[in-house]
Image 1 (cartoon, one colour):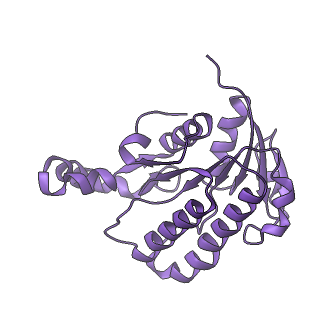
Image 2 (cartoon, one colour; image 1 turned 180 degrees about the vertical axis):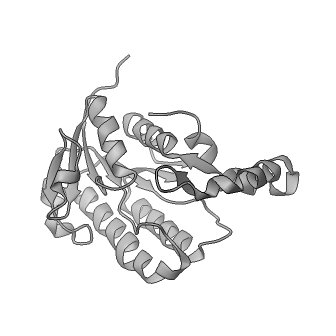
Image 3 (cartoon, one colour; image 1 turned 180 degrees about the horizontal axis):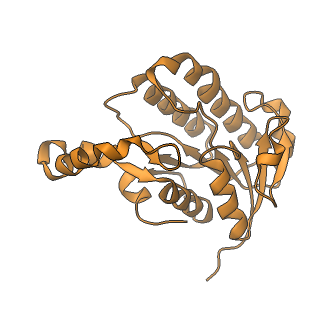
Length: 219
């Protein structure tokens, strides 16, 4: 049985995760409207509709969300590191606050938010901002999916492959097994697949998708 096509509104659609997600949604017959900054329109995959706006100012894009029933929030600081704590609040947190408020006002039924593994053993400022972002989305009352990877392997993001032997060992040891699975590595293809599934099978209430479930399939 084919999934009915729908309109999906995406922020961060020209980024590392956003562009392949937009391509996958278009290939599956969905219409995609993507928020872009001036000058970034050409980075969208062909077939997506670009809307010019500022991700931290909801008034610049709230009128463009309808008729989308699903909103995918992907905006965030590139290559997160402990030195970017202030940016996490000014970009990541400010954008999810603007997006969640705008989506609720526009009548969105399902909000998809890429968060991070919780609780986290490192990157405390980043994890705290993402947890606060989840709380903001919950407070709107929308149905929501929180996708919680730790690190997404892909082009330009492969250095953690060096850690794979340690991950495998930690997954075998009972004291570290749960942590190793929660902060395990996932691929870009697995993340896109998880997000497509989230869009096409919306929950009633709040659903949390963690690393073991992200790894289940590909787009």
